[in-house]
Length: 444
Ligand code: DSN
Image (cartoon, rainbow, N blue to C red):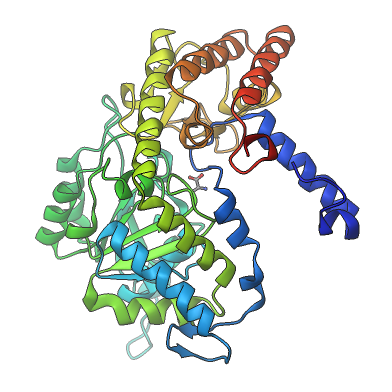
């Protein structure tokens, strides 16, 4: 943990320093089970907080709008080459600030937003009056079934600019049924079919989606934000060979800095680059691009595959232990790094928000999550999303996962009893002390 004397923030800004120290302590002393979070290495952290933050570098390597970009070119080209090596894509744009922007780049490059479509208004038009045109159609997974805001939710730009149809998971199996996706695709004739999710615990059948996209003449986008690390390690099928576009964040299982990455087939390279800059963004965040380069370098090493295997083993052990204690998981388990606990079985009066709060007080950090066919609102939910990437980074294995399943079970089944929370909190602290964070003084 950083000390007061050797830290410039501490000397200059005690208010921020206090929050900084408290956050370091929180991360060290809690079990991070939010499926989209991780702990980066000391090298990634250093790159993200480096002198690269000082530099503007609008443009791309070799073609910048600013002088003094030779080191920016070097580091961005490294990130690009490493991303291409990891995923085997024709083209990689490492500049998106986030996963949402990585997706927006695809929408801007490949889709026609038309002008705002209002059926009632259109009916009232007189001959000769300009008619508003509807935007292109997106077919994607529903947010409540594990999809993402940027895949066409009505409150997001993707849902405001385009028409959207959603597929969902099967009520019985909790899995995506490709026959249903095909039926919807034939019906709505999308220009873009989106695969990928924020909360789907099963393996994606990319080839099956590609067949449907081809049949209806749609472009295919796979958003692998959650599973990118597994894909890079070869532990989940890679969508790159069959998709026009593949997007990801860089900070989840991939364990890099917060940010986005858009990959595409060679034919789309120019349009994707123009969509990211100048279409959506100005200056790239070069400190984060440097950190992406470092993280992609780490992900190409054999140890990364060992780490990803631990993520999977941990998730399997945690899921099995929860199931064996009578809990219900959407789709009855997991093939990847996350699972969705459905509280409706056994605890119908307990909301995800309540369980998140009780577990949080015990030092177990999870997020409430809508589950398929949820009747509660998004700030309440009937589910919890639980993931293992961060704890696997700390070196926790299947034995620890069994203990953690037991702790989760005790907190939830006691319905937040103060005594149980206090006792679990003691066990959490003990476990955390045995597994320091990467780069923390106690792990060096
Ligand atoms: N917020 C991310 C997640 O938690 O999965 C998705 O953007």
